[in-house]
Image (cartoon, each protein chain N blue to C red):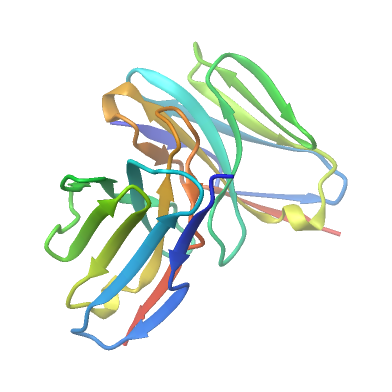
Length: 115
Length: 111
């Protein structure tokens, strides 16, 4: 149980374009999902907390107008990287919890390369 | 805020035992988690300690001492497939349900 599906697994886009990443909880309802970013050989950095039916809570230093998060249903959260630049190239990973103190269940991640 | 410290790298041979230590700082401690991440993959959950003591799951065990703000992950009977990065992560009341990760320990298992 507690499967999180993330799509696409990798994407290459041109600078200035936008990319949407989907995160779905397949067998449970996720009122809260988390979006992380990971650069090579570094740890996972929380970008934002996505709450179903309300605005996302962004971590300090993360531009909310650049990284648009929508959590329209209990099983789907999306992250849109707008006007992508090469420095946005990274591994983006979503995760969800089944309860307040449950472990994080991660999607397989999306490797974004901006050329 | 929340912060965690763990060694950056450990090298060991197959069959050996490796202990990865993690010290943390947080307010209103909920629990300490451990995740494994292979190169190119997403993290997978290994264990969770909310109370003091040792939790054993097969070859992996995790320990917590809340009074010392310290925990460790013990990898026994190391196998080549255990070569990966291991992250400790803490959740505290002051940060809500947010999980903060340590820098990760890269474990390299040699034949």
